[in-house]
Image (cartoon, rainbow over all chains, first blue to last red):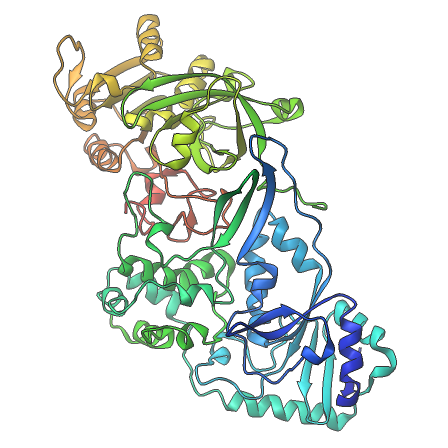
Length: 338
Length: 282
């Protein structure tokens, strides 16, 4: 299907159409910009850099009930089928991240909680025009207008949006939008392309990643890990806010007679993450935990899935309370003499 | 949930029988459990070395090795050391009580590839639990294997698991049983010393032999060194790893050693594989 154009006076109508499914857009929740459901088109504002919490939180919630039960009972009450969802305003890096998380959650055994939600969700991407200071998506094979993981990509042309349907779900949305849309003109497409080009040029931070997986294997015992982890507080912000991090804990919770077994985000930066009941910890200090985090993303994931588990969104750099910078770490890895 | 089997959803199983293997703060209690669902009871299949996630609703789940061999019948056995919150709750279960069980998880000992060979197990403490199904499997298919030798030790005689089973094997003579305790005790007729030393004393020939070891990390390390001294090749040596686990099938992340997950790529590893894996002996 060819590209369409949505003029801004029709944007409200388009949002109303999307609202027929459960619509998530970036919103301030407390002090945090994150994807949250909207009830009215007035709550939709697509002027933002990127959400603090990545949209993975919709498909892989921070806390999710696996099943419920009653105290003393043995009947397991399973959650209902997930409803159809639309995520509007997903940045291309975060959509790409979902394709990375997909690999893990459909590895050997499908994770039904994630996979069912993922199938029922339409991703409407929004091309970046003002990349953040710590963005480095172009080094990881992405870009401000990359299309991986996106069903329908929007580019803000000023007076309207260019809509590029990329999948059947995206095409269906365009069909449903009907007269709200017009065929995009050649100049609209050219305008979008040059905006994409300009945005890519605004990304200043870069790294050559090709040698990193191999280098990491060779640097296993390097003093680098102690040096870079000395400042780490072990707060886990880098992993919680990472769009590709997917590790979780499973916990039972009782409230009165109602119980549930749920999964909650966990972080490899926490001591308890690998702590054995015996008291033994195979990753006893932040040195081992930092080494694992970097190796998991840039070496182990590559071995298991053929891709680096990082999209260069820059959140771990933006949000680290002690300014640990993954690009600095990677630059040291690249430069380190073996 | 549609079309996809939910791997997180456990089966309910009933404790049919239970007994203490050892006493004390870190007592070991064995549970014989059967699935409530008859279809599941029939369809369940596991191999020696595999694990299951067992739990108590309202408390949590723990990954425990299945200590029975599939050749023993339509039940599962778990030998659980009381160590934390979940194992404490499991220890409170009595016959008739329910637990949750899901699995089986992980790879298994390639017992069928070992046919025609001599089998040597070297265990310490609760580490005998994953080795027990090998012993039982070989016993049930005795004609398919050469000698079966079991070396097993613990700190004191009170810390030995499966004592009556070892006595029975010794009496029947179908398994070469070598027991040890770390510290001298009055009336103890067997070896006194550490398991790796008993291994040297037994002095098994590596010829056509598979050695499998499981126990505390420090014991495993010395057993591996001694097996090398006895000229066992890396490919003849197997061990199991354990790590904290939550899901059991490679999603939750935490049990990795390098790019491998103990829950799905293990828990059984040949020494030839493990030598190449970062953190394997961390």
